[in-house]
Amino acid sequence: MLAHSFAVIRCLRPDMPLLPRAVVEAILLSEGPIGSADEVARRLGLRNRFKLARLLKRHGLPPLHRLAEWATLESWTLAAERDRVSLCYIAFRAKRHPSACYRLVKELTGLGWEEVRVLGSAWVQNEFSNRLRRCGRVSDQTAQLAPVRRHGSKSRRSS
Image 1: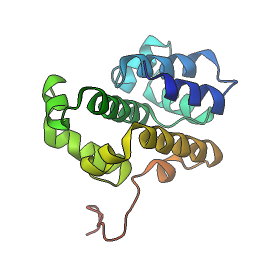
Image 2: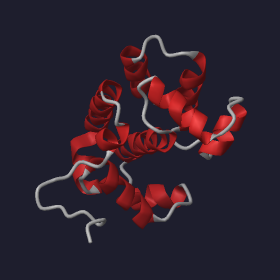
Image 3: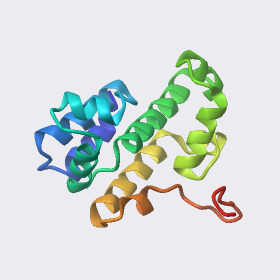
């Protein structure tokens, strides 16, 4: 369980209703993805993934996949600190491709794994908290949850 992130979300969204709270708790308990948006929506009794997305957005939460990605990143940094292992090792143990894990770190934070590892889990937790705060204040969550652009970084989408 990612207790710190759970406490932060409860503090930032104290009046969160049962369904979004159940989603957040499940993601933090599993320390990552809990299934596709369609599967999660069905389990919650929602008609489809779009209803789930609107529910999360209405309560100031990022999309399901972003919540899961941040929980995954936090669990990786905690494991790296606790067990002193590389992201490559963590990826293999999780049956994931290491390069996909390194890309996810870069996409979420705008930093490479080594930089994130040096900054530590406290930095990851703080960064996630900051993004949750911004997410709750603006209507366009996608812009606020997009990767941080660092000086000199180029977007792959520009053509």
